[in-house]
Image (cartoon, rainbow, N blue to C red; front, side, top):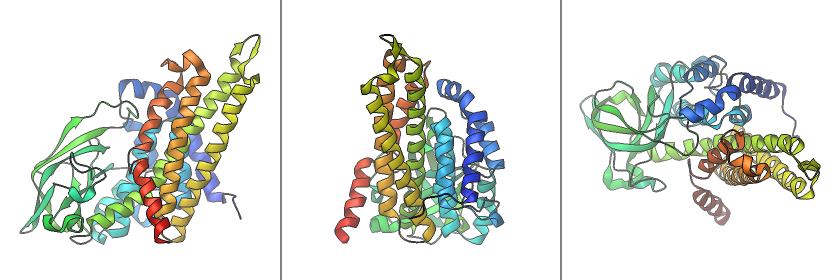
Amino acid sequence: MHFDLNEDQRMMREAAREFAEKEIKPVAAKLDEEAEFPAEIVRKLGELGFMGVMVPEEYEGAGMDAVSYAISVEEISRADASTGVIMSVNNSLVCQPLLDFASEEIKKKYLTRLASGSALGAFSLTEPEAGSDVGNLQCTAVLDGDNYIINGTKIFVTNGGAADIVLLFASTNREAGSRGLSAFVIEKGFEGFSVGKKEDKMGIRASVTSELVFEDCRVPKENLVGEEGMGFKISMIALDGGRIGIAAQAVGIAQACLDESVRYSKERKQFGKSISSFQAIQWMLADMATRIEASRLLTYQAAFVKDSGARFSKDAAMAKLFASETAVDAAVDAVQIHGGYGYMKEYAVERLFRDSKITEIYEGTSEIQRLVIATHLLKG
């Protein structure tokens, strides 16, 4: 098997790593502490093509493949997981479904702005009574002449308060359950659309997570993505792609944990020598490095399968499950290696510890990933 990156992929990694080291890493701790959305960094990411990695050039994207996308999310997340998820959501959960399902009119009007970074996107699916249970959405969309009238509340929307464009899922036929869901493009400024509570989060604090409120929100019927009743399909395919992004984010977090742990273990002395000379520390580093490499390979494999055009649901679920659990375990070990210092905000591993946990939760919990994997296995 051939594991080498091609020239374009290597260039993407180098560009992402250089930008992350110079522009993001120096301010990551401050952004986290102040829960400050990195608007200027996101703008620059757009200019460099990182906000529409897989979008063709005709729609202002970079025209790269999914492997390049995974590489770039990993490198950005290695410096700051908040910036990584901002980028991932815009790419996987907004640009990709519009590219796959939207009309040419929507692509030209909205996708070009999202891919170029001149607008930021959000994916709005979760509700107070509908997280993993997508078929229980209460948000409704009723056709009234040339507009859909949307009512409902969405929660935990990443990029929500900062987004210019929202990909919203609502029920156009409550009796049909998940088969009655539809997808819509919502613009900031549409009458009846407002941003509610901004969440105060444990981790990824520089990303904005908000409640979105729709009160008789009028949406032009041409902003329907695909056809009525296609919402569940669109959301599930989008989440499959999104899981590659979150797996890559988790790999980046885990790699940062390893980087910090190796550096600290060489510097920290106890009993007259560096703690890196102790077998207990060496074994922790070895286990961490091995699981990170396995996570990276699973993530790139899922991206490769996506690029091939084959179904990649199981591959994406495996990558996200393993990489997210690796990130959490790596963060726990990194704090342990740092000892008391690891519990202090002065050290990066404290932030990495807080950032890691969400990768096991959003875009499908670890339990949901296991269900997805098991379903594919049992179907043969």
